[in-house]
Amino acid sequence: MNKIILLLLIILTIYSCSSKPEPITAKNQLDGWAGNPDNPNSKPHDFFYGTYLARASQNSIDKKNMRLMQNSCIEANTFQAKSKLLPRLIGESLAGMTTAAGDNEITLTAVVKEYKDKNNEIKVKSCYPIAKPSREESDSEWKECECIFYLYIKGGKDAIIARAKEI
Image (cartoon, rainbow, N blue to C red; front, top):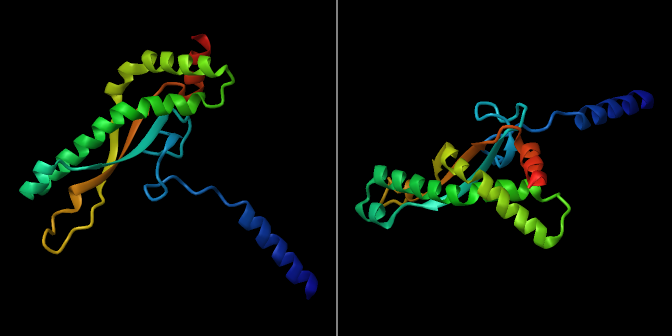
């Protein structure tokens, strides 16, 4: 009897340890290198994702117009993504490179300049309202929003590292 219980415990332990990794979903934040937007868990990981929070314009909030709040919140998020996503992508990709401190900063700047036209290719995967609506303003959840953006880099992280080594 004890042998059967021990055998069951070993089987259960092996089964629980060999479970598949949790797939990427909106709940666990799509952030960093992953697969294509239709299936982020697929390879190759040539897409870099970033999640940003923003607030709708005060003008749209004052007008209490949900559509204006939604548009201005997404626009504010897009502006933020276009200024932050590419430098973050390159910085995280080159983080493991071993160079002198000054050289690393010069390399980072050079690679950002190299890819700067990629900012125009940043796309929105999804946006969600995150503000809690009040009783007085039921359509106020778009006062704040969270958007996931992505950028395609052929070859992914390896391509960024290879280009940095060339520079």
